Length: 505
Image 1 (cartoon, rainbow, N blue to C red):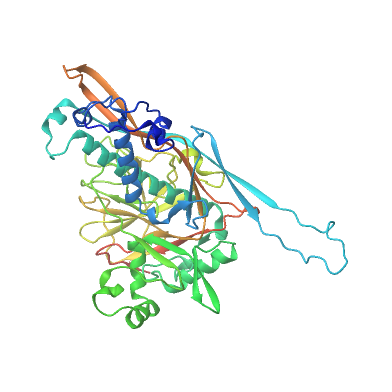
Image 2 (image 1 turned 135 degrees about the vertical axis):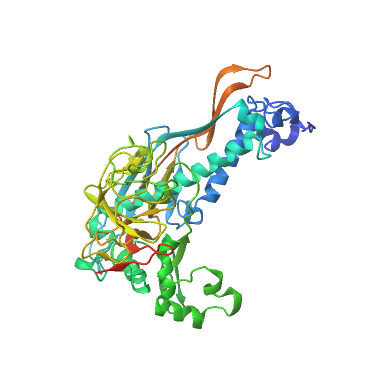
């Protein structure tokens, strides 16, 4: 590796910076443990630079993959998710955020004495507890020797760990906000606006511009500050974020008001929102869609706003209470968190998510959609495990008709989605303003960790190797000085399922 001679008269320049970072000497290498480029790329696990580069790559890549990446910013950024890092915070420590209430009063007039009529600063402190989170991927020498993708183990491990970090971060944000809003009831939840019994949503009650406007008004009424303002020189129009899975936003494209606005007011040609697939602002609200893909992971699919289970194998009886009989059993499995995104399933949020995060209780519903178009409605009880769900068949009479399944066997490729008591597939949207959530980081984030086991070869490579990441972080919805959750609303919405034809009473 080539080195550069740095004169000692540089003062506070690069040499001083290198010394501050723990590096000394006039010939400055990046990290003293790395003596050559060959050491760096040759798989030397002791290279501090290699480890730091891996950690930086994983952390940055994970944030870029996070669907909320554009909506996360530092304190004062005005973004819905406010991030703060406390380098002294370790596991089970707390990172403190401060809020200040506005003041009111009439003031004094003329010669009246002011000192007896002053107002006071009303501070509110809000603490987010952080915790240590770790995960890793392991392999044996056999896999390392195959190299069937043309990539090194370092590259492969960085890819899978960054995907895990991003998916975990965005799912935990959605889960925390979903549960916090539902625990607050009607103060932070919009539901019951459908045409079914007691306002339950039917499959025809898709998202409309009226609901987006109602969510905005609910934020304003609850004290949620806007992300941005628009309008003209005569007025300001507050703007918020309306975030939802694309499967929940699709009906918006059929809403007459929205469709006419895009047709008449949007750009002509290929850039029109109808052709580009993006969503136009409505009432100065940013509409952000999340395209939720079904991948091949052994674990949860969908998201907390779009709970989904995809059956990769046929199931002869989804109402079976265990996996004792091959080919049948509860939806899910024993080797992953397959049902973690469904309502009523408790997952662990680092730091607990704050006192307002309450796990669901009671009965919840799932609609099974088979590959032949038949459907069945099931119920299940809340639970603390995320591997599988034991389902009970519901009587669909007066709820569903036409293509109701006979029996409880499903083909490979069947889809199980969150539903309401009528059998309507449902998802959730988040309407958010400024500082809806606080996201606290501790002293380590995305740090690379290692584990080796079994005999090693002459190159000191163990037969069993593992690499992973560890981070200290936590999250929670912001509370104002009155104890409200002002800047987020959860909206229950109809979810579109590809190819589903649903006849409801």
